[in-house]
Amino acid sequence: MNLERLYEFQKKLDGEIKDKLSDTEKSLLPKKLLAFQAKIGELATETQCFKFWLSKKSPVKRKTLEKYIECLYLVLSIGVEKNYTETEFEIKQVEYNLTEQFLNLFIDMNDFMVYSSKDSYITLMEDLLSLSLTLGFSESDIVKNSKEFYSA
Image (cartoon, rainbow, N blue to C red; front, side, top):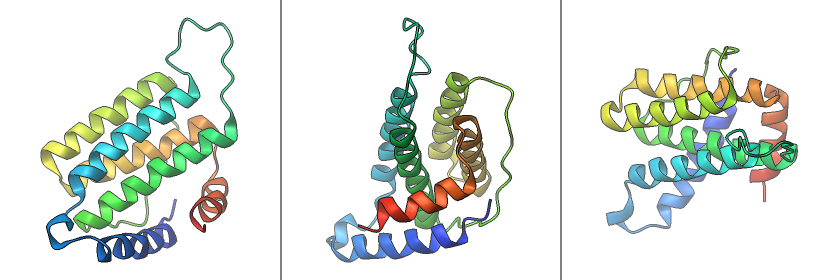
């Protein structure tokens, strides 16, 4: 998946946000990391994948897509903050279930917080993009709806 246009949009948005902040608030990385963890939790809740006690799970696909896009833009924003703006990522269909994918994303985020390396960022982004396949979202779904959610 090529994310060049999405990174450009995120750079512009981050710049507008930083212009409104005081000089002491310019580094937002800790807040972005926490926001991503909160949003990935919201996305997991929306999918209901961990609710083993429910016999019928029926997440709303549109709401799930919206939550996914929020997660994606937070990871893009983290990349902008660290100047890790790779534009080509490999998206792989994974063989483990949705619950395990969410757990893996939390591990990826923790690894990134500890190491903050470009490699750990790429792993985080690739695992998030792979999640889109499991959720049934295409690249065109993501790009088209990104514009809709963030053009307001």
